[in-house]
Amino acid sequence: MLFTFKGTICGYICRECPEALSNVTLRLYRHREDQDVTALAVANPKDTIAILSDEMVAGKASALIAETVTDESGAFAFELDDGAGYDGGAFEIDVYLETVPGRTSKVEVEPLQFTVTTLQPQWRQEDEGQLAAWDYCLPYRFWCAVRARFDAWVICGEVIGCESEQPLAGLKVSAFDADWIQDDALGSAVTDGSGKFRIDYAKSDFLKTPFPFINYEQVGGPDLFFKIETAGGILLLEEPRSRGRDPDRENAGHCFCVDLCVEIEEEPPYENPWFTHVGDFHILTDISATTGLTNSAVAGHGGPNFGFFGNPKLRGFCPKTLPGDPTAPMRYRFLYEDSNNPGTEVPITGTALVAPVVAGARLILWDLDGSGPDWTFQTIMVAGSGATPDPTPIPAVPPGSPWGPVPTHVIEPDSNGWIVVDPDALDGGFYGPLVRFRSAGAVPVGSAPGNGAGNAVSDPKNGTMLKLIFEAEAVSGGPPTYRDELPRIYFNNWGEVRQLDLQQFQVTGNSCTPLSNDLDIRFTADHELMRSWGLSITTAAVVPGGIPALSGGSAPRGGFGTDHVDISTWPSCSYTVRLSTQRSLTDGENDDDANSVPVTFCK
Image 1 (cartoon, one colour):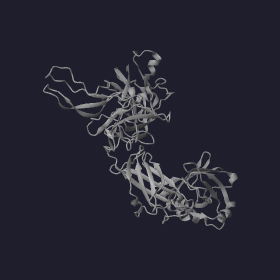
Image 2 (tube, helix red, strand yellow; image 1 turned 135 degrees about the vertical axis):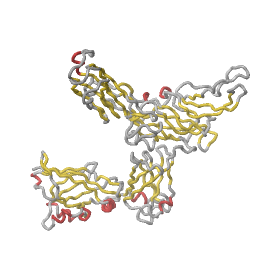
Image 3 (cartoon, rainbow, N blue to C red; image 1 turned 180 degrees about the horizontal axis):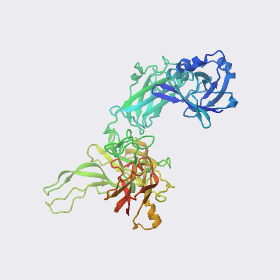
Image 4 (cartoon, rainbow, N blue to C red; image 1 turned 60 degrees about the vertical axis):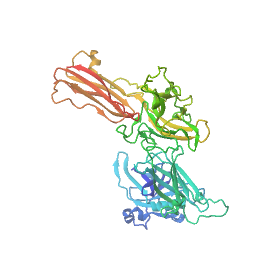
């Protein structure tokens, strides 16, 4: 008989941070005569875990049933047949390690084996034989002691907004040891979509000293403090080195977990240029660094797992002059990188800017009523074309005549996408929408092809992952250059497939022929990010028993098929069948509208 034993195994770095035991060897052993199998099988694994000596491993070698290696996720599977001599009884589970996940140390360490538990699997009958599953995570005190044997040190943490308490993705976290002579950099990592990060290091990373053969580290572990930056290098948090001497940070162990928070303000500091939003969606908190989709609704639009489409506004701030040098005017630009063409950054300029955006305002002398020029607000717009002269020309009108409305001052990017901030701009520079990005210039757009109502789509269309890059620098082009990135934003400009027909019309070839008893609705609705789709029938007639429920749903990619409806008892009247669809897409300020296609028939 075949016995399949499968499951996963992991170890806790701390209670909130498990890690998979990937690429380790699991060994199953029969029990020896001197063991109380019943007592061992009912014992809690935390009471049976034990590191084994080489002699102990050698002493049980003859009892080995089978061994296997876990995959990257810590999953394993044993297939025990008659050849293994196994009859379904209890066995002992051991783990054999030559290293541990994330280890960076170069120190040579002997392999290690430990016993986890004795297990009597709860077998259940399946078509191919008996099946049992076991999932287990080693207690953090034991697992960290094992990691210590391998000189494997790890920091597991999370970064959230101090006020919003939302996880922050795409931030660079750096860890340091506050040493007596010099601060040791232990490593850095970027937070994932859930704000989590992990830094692996070795003892040698915090025993560094500028003096050979002298170690000034007086304690067993590092004294930790942290720095957090955006992808563009803008500093969000810089803990003082004295923080590493606090009791909760001093002499950190091999496994250390930490929660950090940073202030993410709606208005960026006016000293530095900053890319902050796509429409109303904050690039750090509202867009997943993993999927490029929105995390939740913002200001009444979007929602969980919405993609982007259309022409979103890219918002941020750029000052008039270089921070620290009021004599150096500033310029900025946006670029995009297609994930299908990594390394190629394309400036957003010209036709990639579909429509102007109001980037700021300034004061000019203008005669609105014919009484003479006075200081008046003038709107500053950024557009792909249509630049206006500066200063604004004075109209040729008779003296004492009004000059008319204040014309807009339009700034056009150069061929490399650079936009010079108006030196007369109010509020210290341009703040808010900096450009409007025509995404159709970067990703495919059009009506997705279908294969006829009722049929599956043979060529379903998907969107494109982009990186958006913001750069700002002095007009002279000299350093420093400021750079912010939105690593992942998902665009899908494909229209959904929305095909509807009636089988009876295909048979008769005449949509004017009334139907009698049968209505067969053929439909195909398809889109990668389908928010909702559904069939409906409307009529002025009163249908006996009401119109039955028809196909519909909210899961991508939609659906296709044929709905049959018995209309033999329906009154003589006209009826409209409608297939409605709506995509989970937003441009940051407006969501995709619902659309529908109707087919009318008579009874």
